[in-house]
Length: 194
Image (cartoon, rainbow, N blue to C red):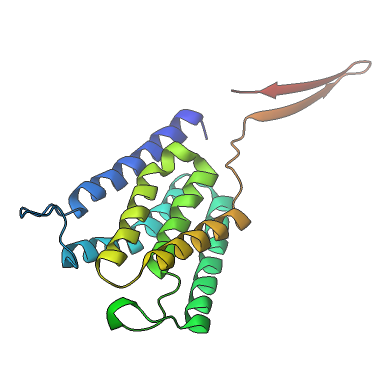
């Protein structure tokens, strides 16, 4: 796939995430910019929980990156297994008595896993909107009194760690080795396209 096509498709992904960030963040017209325990912020974080991984996986399909799709799937499943394994094993209570299984944050680990996949596979500049969505998701969980800072930090570490295990940088087909022969000559060629 030519570099321009890849850049155009990944640029479209960045614009998609930025548009959702703009519409998902509710500005409150009171004396505070953001109200504590605001349901709109929590809903936006819930939206990113599904939108960012779905968009990330869809991007691998659009780019016809089968290896990337498989790497994303392995990292995603590992992330979910580790996150929910730790939740069950540790059974840490949520802040303000809002239930159990707080550590680590599943929302945060899922969205950070997707953002770090984009970063590692396609490059940092394409992952910026996804990292913003991941940071907002972590904030939304604290704002909704579902997690504390340690839960969010652990979720980010688990999500990013699962990506680092399975994901390799995207390699485009830009190298070509050629060989030609005739009755008395042999020609070996190497072509690299930047």
